[in-house]
Length: 245
Image (tube, rainbow, N blue to C red):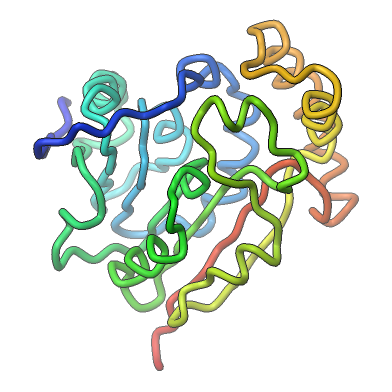
């Protein structure tokens, strides 16, 4: 079924060119999405949905709303095509714009997948997002980890920063409680360091992406658990809005 699309005039243009390339990283998307799915309930808002390659891994189906918020009109067009080809739910809602358009709308889950690091004032963004969260709902962020790993790749796709535990705690919305914070992809950390200090690439090749996704990610899935999710090139944070003040 074709998604419902709501647009407004926007001249925003996403700086990156990696979305199509990384849409093939199925093992990685399957891995981190399993970390997040236990917190996905009710009506879901996916901020910065891009071309929809993450949506298909995250969405378990169900009766609630799934709203994809994407400010880039070009990516919104690709998003319509991607989600038109999935049968996970009867309809998606696609909004071309930012949180300001969702006046008085409330959600049970709000997710930022590789999005927050692109936003200049990320603290204000999370505060706005928290205002759209129902009591008992979850705010979920997945972002690249460790500023020391900031590379030409980060710069090329418009990252403002990479995060660690301290940085994410510092921008926690005042009315939410931090429930989970963990690192993922400990083996991939080595590859990221190699790019920073040796390769200096602004974009991985298809062969490099295939090697990471098919050989490195499975190693991380084993050792992340052994290391208690204390090391990795990606960080996940989950906040919850209390049901009572």
